[in-house]
Image 1 (spheres, rainbow, N blue to C red):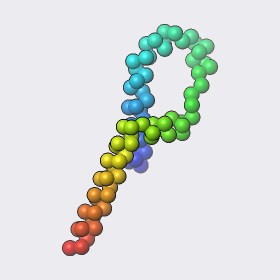
Image 2 (image 1 turned 180 degrees about the vertical axis):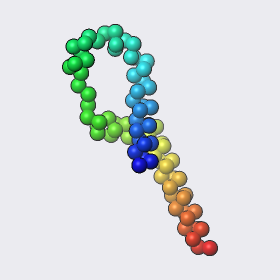
Image 3 (image 1 turned 90 degrees about the vertical axis):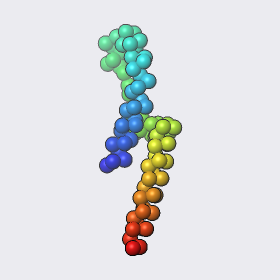
Image 4 (image 1 turned 30 degrees about the horizontal axis):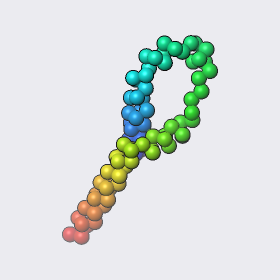
Length: 80
């Protein structure tokens, strides 16, 4: 569950931040018919593209490192 929330957070940060700079031009140029005909990609492809971003990969590597360290600490603690 935590991984999904992290993925959603990262996805929203990566995908929506660049759009804010372009938002004013897009809104001015689009007509109501353009909004009706707008086709969005499936969510699966958006998540997969977000996972390929360098920021996500860095955070995923950091998470894996922390999980590995936690396992080592638990194993060391159980030896006492």
